[in-house]
Image 1 (cartoon, rainbow, N blue to C red):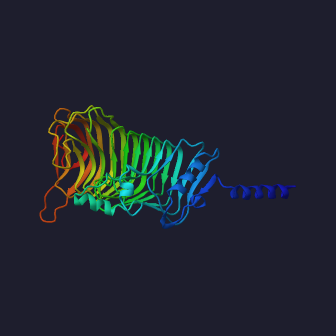
Image 2 (cartoon, rainbow, N blue to C red):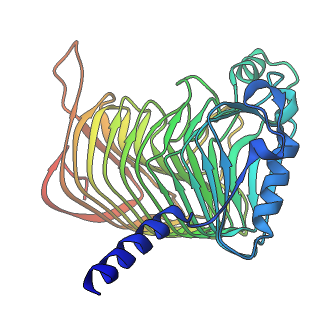
Image 3 (cartoon, rainbow, N blue to C red):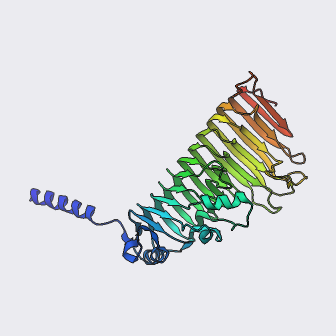
Length: 391
């Protein structure tokens, strides 16, 4: 009897291993072709709709191969937990106008309990960037992958290449975890933010490498309760809060932690930026700790006179920046102003803390010290702070 029980348990274990954890919907079974030429948009949508309507947990599966898709929206709510598992590569059509006229290339809309795993998406943005640089009439460009009004999302192991504009965007969503992603675009590609978050809360971004032509990660209005850690950033513009003060009635940014990350040859390190115009927005309870800067333009930067071009507002930023801590930040700055706190005249920054900072200026011609620049900034310092604190 004991041997029978053991055999039954062992056989049952094998049986459980053989039963898939969720129903699989292979896009090839719905007509997709991984030849890098055939438009597979409709098969992808058919696979999604079948999976989304399943009462059991389901899986949209993209096997090895290269699949061309046009702008596509994967719409919820779905009836059960759903996975989107990519083993192959998803590419945009060669003509950049096909996705460039849409705000989104791959959009998940109102989906909850969603997991997206692995694979590569390539928006083939080179010709679009060339159009932008030429000054010709160009479409506005598409974000590569967007989660809009989504909840309980995991994005893991995805590689995003050559996005026309933003690679990944999280808007009006909550409880989102992004991990082990790789984002790559040339340093000169315009507006190719790695990950942009706006009007979302409870977001974690971790264990990722981001190389791009704009911010590695940007946090817009309404970003709250976020943890960003173990990021390799560069090239790019660093990790930014903002730009803020795009409009007067604007949601604030609060409870953000950026930690345990390395910045390499980026334009900035950690940055808070707002336009010099009226706003009722704010940025508060921000923690930047355990960061390494390697030849970074402005390792620590608050810029409340943000103006990337010549059409600048000449007012004073209404955004209130407060309770910001910079702790255990070390490395090298490629500009002499390693710490620059340029705050609003009408709303000075308050509660700024500098603790255990060691930043040196890399100048191959002259031995010059790094400097701290402060305007309209109030705060304290603790431990060793190099360059010397202005508080």
